[in-house]
Amino acid sequence: MTNQDIEERLTNAITCSNVGRFEEAKQLIKMVLTLNDLNISHKTEAMLTLAELASRQSKNDEAFSIAEEALSLAIENNLSQSQSRALKIIGIIHYSLGSYDKSLEYFGKVININEESGDNSVTAQVLGNIGSVYLSLGLLEKALEYYGKALSLHYKHGDKINIAIITANIGNVYASYGWLDKALEYYNQSLKLHQEQDNKQSIAQVIGNLGLVYRILGDFDKAFEFFTQSVMLQQELGVKIGVAIFLGNLGLLHTDFCSYQKALEYNLQSINVYEQIGNKHGIATIIGNNGNIYYKLGEYRKALSQMLKSLAIHRELGNLRGASEVIGNMGTIYADKNYEDYDFNMAEKYLLEAISQSETLGLMNHLQSLYETISTLYENENNLEKFAYYFRKHHELYIEFQNEEVKKQADKFGWERKIADMEKQKEIELLKTEAEKVNLQIKIESQTRELDTSLQEIIKKNNLLQLVQSSIKKIRPFTRGEGIQYVEQLHDRVTRSIAKLETISELDKQWADVHGTFMKKLQDSFPELTTMELKIAALIRMKLSSSNMASVLFLSQRTVESHRHSLRKKMGISSSDNIYSILSKYSES
Image (tube, rainbow, N blue to C red; front, side, top):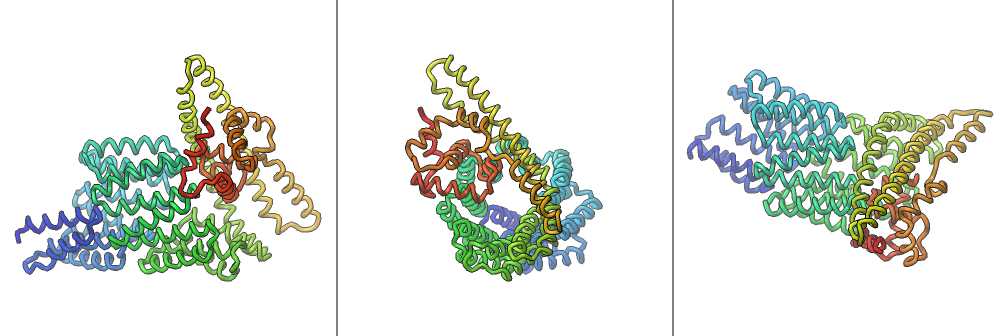
């Protein structure tokens, strides 16, 4: 077999691996490795291709072992390009395991080698990888910094494919910031570049990213449309890994909107595809998602059963991040007073283990939730010392994230309002005369501006008062004597000052002006609906997510989801029905 034949087979193996045809890729590599006259350079490259394949299948121990052996061969034989590739693969394995410090260490070694050899093309790719590490760590400015460096080098080399990839990654950063207009701008730039290259696999990925933005916005229809397009295109291309990922995203989308049966159906399809390609990491993730669905349904034992299966796979793969998240979720279930097998000791054990791992991995957002859950657990058991300790840690992270979260929330709300305005525009176009259109346009714009302004003021005020309220709660366990009375009075005063939507008469008037006709038609058809359920229906029609509804109505997200469930039940809407299409009928004149 000639050198050209060997290189062609290795190239084909990489292509098969990229599109999820793992067995085909493995056979091609093994065919090369069994050759008697294989030179050391080709042997090393074949081993590295095999390591990449194992990594794609989340066989991390196998991938690490092969990459380490290939690295030793590359060092012994002074193969600098193979050294660079081996170090990059090991860095990616550490990244997938959540070992971000180790990942950065290996990526740094790659950059040092390529600076000596002058190979800026590989340096550009690794700079992009470093950007992705910082994105996972939530260090968004650092992520943008490294993506910017990578992009600059890719432009110098005229590497349009990688320019398009980094452009999409920058979109991911802006999506994480909550700057969805910028995210959409970069995703569309990336999509255009991929279309120019006719890179259908990447086109499918970016279309899926657009779906993720609309999922953040709470726009079920748009998110469903883009996720479905991505799945269909990747099925056409035979990219099984992409099919599995976006089937899982469709499951998450239906979970967001409480269509739990549909979510479970999509998750089952996703698991089937992951099993076909032998991707255990994907299987563990989706099984964990199923556990979260059963928890939301109140089926606690079934939830724990799914989470234990997920945890076993994550531990087998050495995936510390995945294991930490599942362990935390299990602790949350045991800490739930509604669970008939509520168990303080089990809850404490799992939560402390998850906290320890999350602190080691630097998973700050996960930690905030864990601190809050365990502080509530200790408060319920009247262990005020430990309650105060973990509540303080939760409070510190809460303050750190507050400004960023408020900004994200405001930006999300603004985009959701724009989408709602587009829906209003459709109604306007149905009117017979231009005069009617203009008059109604002016009225709607005025009403929606007033409602937006009022709601934003409430959200801003409530966020501040909630922060004060949590600070009072923090110091209450340490107050003695007459101070207890003053603290309680202050807490009550702050609580009463937090404005709920239904207590403000002027806002109620604005609400009635914008949504009155819709709510009246709905109530006439379903008299048993409560006032709050009617308001929830109006917000669903506006395509607000449960978290945004919670901010507007100053309810917990769980309470909002309970109202949504009750609304569906009273209207006879099953989990597989499209609630938006049904509610839209009551908007028609």
